[in-house]
Length: 352
Image 1: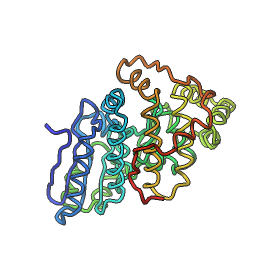
Image 2: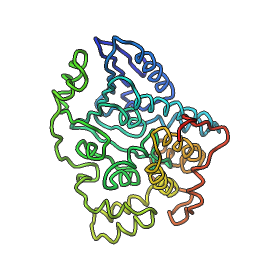
Image 3: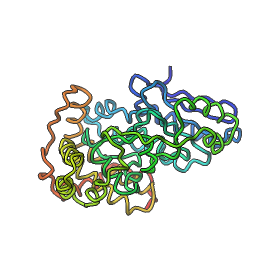
C-alpha cells in the first residue's frame, strides 16, 4: 500500500500519511506525491477543502525520514539529501500559500517535517494527545521546513526555548506559541472529518472546537506558565542564556540548562543564530532559503551522522559531538553555516 493515501470525498480532498510504524516519517517520495496532488487539486473547482491526517495512533508525522537522509549522506551524496529538503520546502510553502482551506489534524507527535506539513496550514487543529516540537538539535541539525520562521515569531521567547531544548509543546502550549489554531477533543475528530466533506472548513472546525485543557508538556509543566523562560531566552548568545538559566534559582531552569548542554553544541549555536536572523526576514520564502543554506552545511557536518547513530541506529543516546562543548563553537563557525554552498539552488530565487 502507498505511503501516502489520496482520496476525494464530496468537496474534500484527503491526504493520509501512511507509515504508522515509523510515525509517518516523510520520505522524498512522499513529499513528491503530496506536492503533485496539491498541484492537481488547486485547479479542481469541485474540491474546496484539503485535509491532512496520519494513520496510526502515535502521531501525524515524526518528521523527515532521517534514516533516508543519513543513508544519502553516508554514501557521500549530500547533494541528494539537500535535494530532498529543497523539494520538501517547496511543498511547505505551497501549503502556506494554498488557495483553498487546508486543515491539518495535528494528533499525537508532530515533529520536524510534520510541522512543515501542518504548521503552515490555514486550519491547524490540535487534540488531547498532541505533542509538537522541533527536535533537530538532538541529531546535529537545526529547525527547518519553515520551523525557524514559526518559532522565531512565537511570543515571549517560547519558540527559542522549544528550539534549543528539543522539547515538545502540549495542545494549549502549541496554540499559545502560534503553532496551532484550534483544539478539538479527540473524540470529535471523526465528526470533523465527516463534516468537512460537506461544510466549509471554518464552519466545520468551529462546530467541534473547545477550550484546550491546561495540560503539562513533556517538560513536566505548561511552557506558557514558565515565567523564567522569557528573561533567560531573550539573550542573543547561548552562553548568556545558560548563565541566565543558572542564575534564575528555579530548578526547572537549571534542568533546562543541563538539557541544552546534551545537544549538539554546533547545532545549538547555529539554531539560536538562525532564529534571530529569521525574525528579521521579510517572508517565509526568504526563511526557507536561509534554512536550506544552513542544512547544506549541517548535513555535511559530522554531528549529523553522529546524532543519527546515537539516537536512531545504535540508540545508545550518548552522542560524541565534535566539538564537544558550546564553548568550543566559535562565532565564525556558526556564521559559516549561513554562507551559500556551491551547487545548492535556493528554493525561491526571487525571495528577499
